Image (cartoon, rainbow, N blue to C red; front, side, top):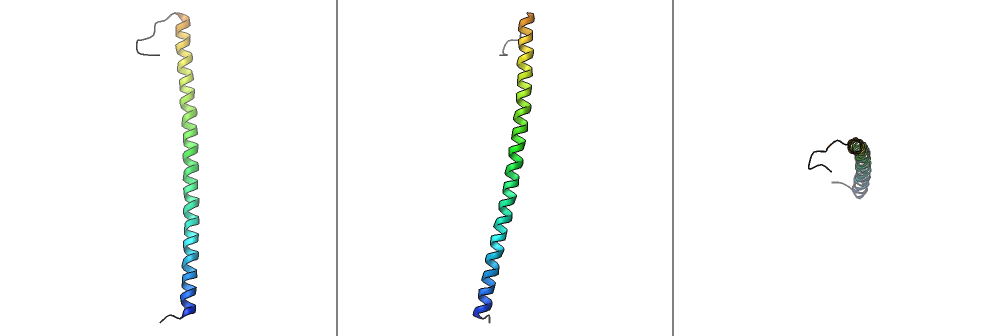
Length: 73
């Protein structure tokens, strides 16, 4: 039968374990958040570059007098 001291020690150890586990989970979540943020930023930059290149090509086509296909802006 556990004594009061061993019961307190066990509860203290469990509390420390839970606190460390929350800390690890928080660090993992923050790393995932940061990785997603970087991925979104890179994707946005890539898509912006593609859009600007497309717009420049369309503008060049308008200047040269070429006809655009219908349905394109």
